[in-house]
Image (cartoon, rainbow, N blue to C red; front, side, top):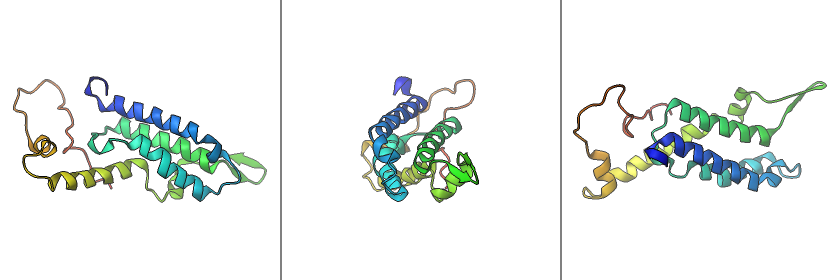
Amino acid sequence: MKEGRISECVKDRTQTGNRAYAANHHMLKSKIIKRSVKMQVYKMLIRPVVMYGSETWTLTKSDENLLRIFERKILQRIYGPVQEGDIWRIRNNEELNRSINREDIVKFIKAQRIRWLGHVERMEVGVMPRKMMEGRLFIGRRRGRPHLRWMDDDVAGL
């Protein structure tokens, strides 16, 4: 993570996810393998690579958008185009959302964050992750909008 910014980490993880996709490209493009198996490959091999360490991210809207774009790109490749009469067209975002039952990668990350929160809450009082979560820094405020903290991130959007 460069300069402690989550956006850089998200970009790095999506690039790593692209490499994981490229490694499994032959399976995901095969016409022999069913779509359900391809989705399992995505959920078991590619998505975890992108989400590594995501429990501690504070995502901005642009980070969420970047993750959704990555996921839609992979889903477009798995599901392929649709034929309507004699014309082939690319599936739109709504069709892709319906195909994954609206369980996109951002919702999954937010669910993992809640799981991580429960894990930290059950830790002993003196353990470092719990100290970091409960601790406050009392320094002078900088100008401008305050930085987003992990606890301030919206997890109610599930």
